[in-house]
Amino acid sequence: MRKSLATLLALFVLIVPLLAACGGAAATPTAVPTAAPTVAATTEAATEAPTEAATEAPAATEAATEAATEAPTEAATTDSPKPRIALVTDLGKVNDGTFNQFAYEGAKKAADEFGLEFDFIETQASSDYEKNIQTFVDEKYDVIVTVGFLIADATKAAAAAHPEITFIGVDQYYDAGQVTDNLVGLQFREDQSGFLAGALAGMMTQSDTIGVVGGVDIPPVKKFVNAYENGAKYVKPDINVLSVYNQSFTDPAKGSADAEQMIGEGADVIFGAGGPTGSGGIKAAAEKGVYVIGVDQDEYGTTFGGGSATGSDKILTSAIKRVDVAVYDQIKAVVEGTFKGNGIAVYEAANDGVGFAPFHGADAAIPDAVKARIDEIQKALADGSLTTGVDPVSGDVDAATVPEAKPYTP
Image (cartoon, rainbow, N blue to C red):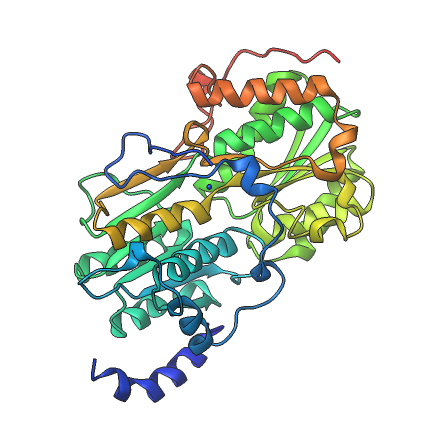
């Protein structure tokens, strides 16, 4: 694996002359033109021990390629050449405990399972998005996975310019018919998992004040933040919800400061919905004895070291997005010849694409009645009988669909 573009280019110069010679329940996406995702059950997958990638940076490119090609499965056996897979992260790293890591793990799993060559670039600045994608285009990779809402424009442009390459965009929205057949955007109903997080926070607070430390003010984050507030007010209408957006996803110190300010204003449950920035917030809050809720991955296993970190008994759950499963499924579709682009694939409560992690060390502190209510809410979101009151694309509050409150009585 590579950790920077400089390393990639150096390696590229060395090997070009040589290369010149050559989850759980099955899930169906919601009415979108792409392959049907198979999504493992959120809760079961969230209980697994953190992978090695959660604590260590991946090894060098050659080692990764060897690992991916040593034992290809029968499913990967084909007369046609195997696709070469590449991934460009959003700002952050492939072991940062957030959706970058989840995307990496999904791509790496597909590479290992199907015997595919795999490489990645960790983006250092948003100005590098286009350049990083172009690096893999120039190296003639067959599938390029890009991670994050902010890299969508660069991904769309590259897909239009290179129809021979398949592009998979995590957290990217594309209208059907407005993009090329070689591009699919993976959309997640963050509003549904955010609503669950808010409902849990609303039932667990003793001060009637809760908070959320958000990342950059973009649709995926807005879905989390706005639905968190709606979920809390669904079970406790008069609750006070503090929220803040940040200029960066990679500033845990700022997230920590935000959380401390919220604690000073009376918040006794804090949700971190901003990558490492949000993780910094919930880590600081938990260390002060405040209940917290993670995001994207099960942060009990990442941010809190599987229970080894101070405050790990204070993380109630995490609002999960199965980015790993979505990326894996789309690469699998490419391998099997069933990939469909020109639109989006939606991962939601109905197909276990979003949900919440186990309660882990906080389990005993959560009343059975609260657990039962959370299960009830999740089922209602999945079957469509309950809405979040948040637009699933823009993340804005949709007043017409905000559900009528059903207060929780301890």
